[in-house]
Length: 415
Image 1: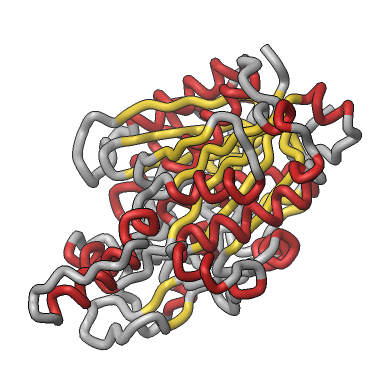
Image 2 (image 1 turned 180 degrees about the vertical axis):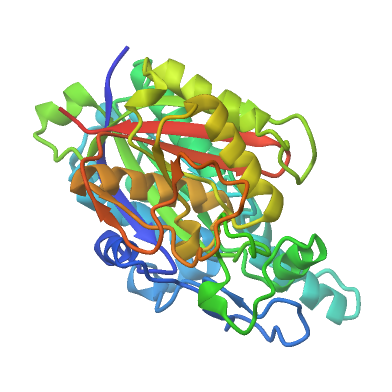
């Protein structure tokens, strides 16, 4: 099978609207949490989140495009534009045959939830006459970001969306990896976007008791593995990757960030929102990823954990890691302590963190965790408070979602 490398990255995040700004803030341990500004949340239990800041879509979309694309698609366009430019693929100069070998697999957990919410509020506030926008359906459906990225760049290859809740974009990356290594594409644009900081989303997660309600301390609210953790902090944004056949990348002298060498997907088969108490799905997807990569567990230098800062989820993941990696010392960090939880976009953003960790030999910190849970295995190093500069050759990235979906991907230093 073909080797697959990463040649382009793009990001729209609560910590910056480009890769360099985002990575600098991650390395410096910044939090993207702040009081919500998108709507009046005074009657909600949670008043804060990790919103994207200073995003100006009119800088790259015209008026018609702004009208016809939900915010989750706007985030996807911005991130994928950056990744494609970073990769120097230049699809606009390619022949139809070349563009037919490049595709898009894009993820979202919620799609155009903001558009749907707005249209329904206007309908129910009216006299019952159905005056829905002709853009409602194309703005709402989850696959539209993938379609728009394809249309915008004339990419004629494989094109679809993945939806597996918070595993969605890690699943998209694994599927893109498989597509290239099986020889069905020369390059793929993949990743995910989410714009779910809306009234129905915040209200729904509050009803599930899933969100932190630490309104007096937004920046300290996401504290993975801490015994006082009380729920996740919702985030939004997008992460984009260009994956490419190694031979194709070398032929055009592309810059290579890292190599993707394995992916595993499984299920908890346990509960619609809760994780298996022993991390069964986590164990299976990590084992499958390692087997796919042909690696023994001792090769992994760093695990970017799913680590949402929920009571059950954090501990079940650590139990799963313990089962797979045994008693060896291993570094495990929860970068959602900085970004918040980007839901369907989380896997892409955390894959980018994993790739840049390899490039720069930096392991980002888990911030905010002051009192590690007593159930944390002693051999797991949570890299608390400050990033560490040390060799990083292999990184495993975990993502888990409602419905029991689990996915793990493995990146390595390109040699």
